[in-house]
Length: 272
Length: 246
Picture 1: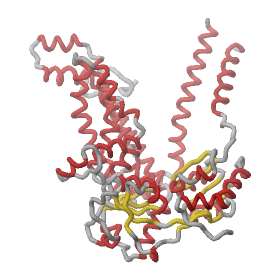
Picture 2: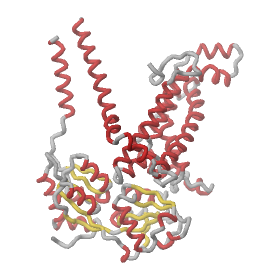
Picture 3: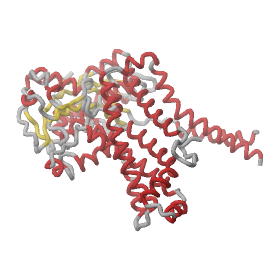
Picture 4: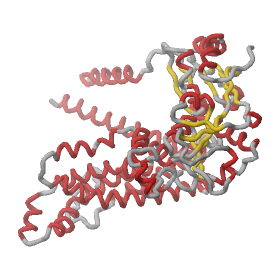
């Protein structure tokens, strides 16, 4: 017995160490590639600062859309009682399995000049490719499902009795959502949002194909890394570190003790 | 204690077997993406990696397991040669640029000089550091259109094939692509003539990659096939130009 338990414990420790070593070694190597004191200079290049602005602007807009539309939609999908709910949930996961370049082609075949809605959009005077709106669409399309999926799980895990109790006390559906469901699901929602944000800020393939790489308009940080690779490896690495810092910062914020959740309970990203 | 050594040793052995590189049976060809159609016909049965020549050169510099490097510009093959990473490069094909619009030409572009109009068109071009982009800038310079990339809305791509799809799918009103790519996409693209005198000299160079464990013999076979009569025929069929016979 004790031997078997010992073997199992060794296995656990070995796999944990292997996991950390494998996932963190490339990140450590990236950080060691460029001397830290050279970073500010490399990041001050105008190509980098303009790409940073494009990335921040488009991702903020995309994340607002994802949260504002995704949260109520996930609430309905999680708690609504209607036919075909499992099928709908599966359909929502389809964009997750698309390789980014295919996602870009899919967006073009829908919203591109010759796409499904191309002539309708053109008639309305809207041309999406090569615009920041296209970057926002690409990021929303690729990152959104991560949030919605997590939000559905978070809402589905709620204790329906608590929601019903609030209703019995006369709370409207809107109040139940806002005052009970949102705070209780907050940890799960933040965890899902952090993942979606990290996916969106690093988006490359769909953006390149759908939005193009126009300097100061659609050239995001990941596109800038790729374009910088052969000009200057150091500056490409510096942009990579910047992306890492932004994503790491967001993950940290998502892990901070919840300020507006009454439970303080934890989820994968909610903290240990 | 000895009892858990066995499972651990087994697990490690399995891991080592799983991670061991697959035995090399084919030659690994790193080729410019504009060669993606023709290389498999000339040297079938080999592993291929198609990307921008700059990306490929960078990967080889980082120790990628390439045996042959087929570059869309002398610059990258010569850079590897200078660093001792490949043998003397050979010119094996020539190319030209074609100015294209989508087949339906929604912007109504008929002459390359229209790019001189301020505020003009959405253009797709190669990035300023990849061969296609460098050639495009040379061509525009010779046409006296050096400012065209500032006057139009320009999206830049690291891969020649991305420029082709961007124009073919109508995201860009026009773009500059390799003539060979134009011949491969005539149903979706329309070519607009460019004075021959403005064409840059586009030479493709092949070299045998030098690294420990490289399949040098296989690499030499691939290159001799490229330079052979049948190789030249296949390149000509794919609308590449040919260098004088060496």
